[in-house]
Amino acid sequence: MKLLSSLILRFVCLTLVAAGSIGGLAVAGDKTFTSDGPDAIWRSIFARPTDAGTPALEAQRVALGAALFSDTRLSRDGDRSCASCHQPDKGYSDGLPKARGRDGTSLKRNTPHLYNLAPATSFYWDGREPTLESQARVPLHAANELAADPSQLLARLSADMDLRRQFAAAFPNETEMSEAALLSVLAAYEKSLVSPKTAFDAWVTGDDDALSDEEKRGFRIFVGKGGCVSCHGGWRMTDDGFHDIGLETDDPGRSAVPGGAAGIPAFKTPGLRQVARTAPYMHNGSLATLDDVVAHYAGKHVSRPSLAPSLVRDLKLDAEERAALVAFLKTL
Ligand code: HEC
Ligand code: HEC
Image (tube, rainbow, N blue to C red; front, top):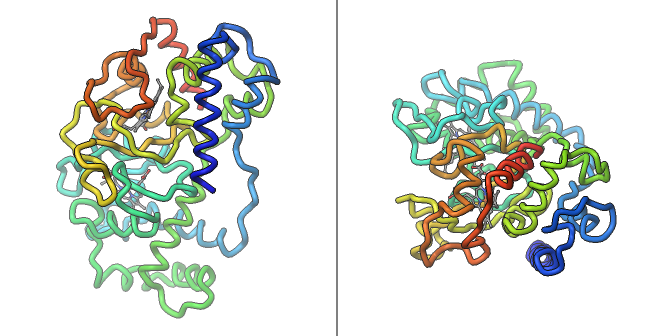
């Protein structure tokens, strides 16, 4: 089903991009947006699902996960938490090119944001973890991250009567606090991190004036000649796929993970919601600003055979077009 819908999205995108470039339709041309025709289709592509609400028990787990996400008792030294690197005021990233580890050295990669991960099925830049629960276990124990002491962690948390009560309420069928329950509340909290609605969502739901003319020109490049939509489509603005977009890197990425294609330094397409808050960008934090990102796509990428087929090879954007694309990205 997921594959089918992503194939349909790809087909619609390619058709619209082609129509735009051949026929000069609103997508690629300079005309104003209308609420029917191609705009209606773009709006449906970027529309959010309706919110089904959170059941009470799940809400308790989310609240507990929220508290533990920033609880330094999860770390061996009692001085750091998930939120030390995934900082809420920086879109759950940390503002650094690469994350800083417990011993002060850099980790191998940039700290990604944590928005809209509930529907995702692979985690990390190389997608090596299949669930948020299995992922959370890694930083919890990694020597250079939280380095939790397995023999102490649960004892330390269980000594807090208030926390015990909250766990008992969130897991009525369990008698003891367990690591599995701890990981599941962290995951429940992460699944609740839906990016806030923005001007772009207002435009998607029909408010033609929600975006400025410049931002609309940027959107037209995003879904038109820039080809961005072929990987950053849908309301989360990611295809959940892995691609080589031609960054200078010595990181093997997905190719070092079972299931990855040998020799292709592919990385997970990050969702672009709240992207203005999560600089610097890319798996290695090598692009400092959104202007740098746009310059990368518009001619600065490395050419090599493993480049993603859907990446526009010879994209040319003048200064005005670049500024418009950046202005659009800031509406997300
Ligand atoms: C020292 C900094 C640091 C700490 C502490 C940390 N993270 Fe991360 N986190 C990172 C980095 C760096 C990555 C990307 C690593 C990679 O892709 O190889 C990451 C990736 C992730 C991802 C994958 C996101 C995606 O889009 O695939 C999730 C989820 C996550 N962390 C959750 C957590 C949780 C939960 C905790 C606490 C138990 C935590 N992190 C603690 C730095 C940190
Ligand atoms: C072939 C698929 C593909 C296309 C086309 C594509 N992207 Fe990306 N994008 C990616 C992948 C994969 C990454 C992460 C690459 C990495 O870190 O190695 C990324 C990263 C980004 C980031 C950084 C986000 C972050 O959190 O670090 C931005 C911003 C971005 N793309 C914007 C764009 C724009 C604008 C366009 C069109 C000009 C575009 N992308 C076209 C796949 C694509």
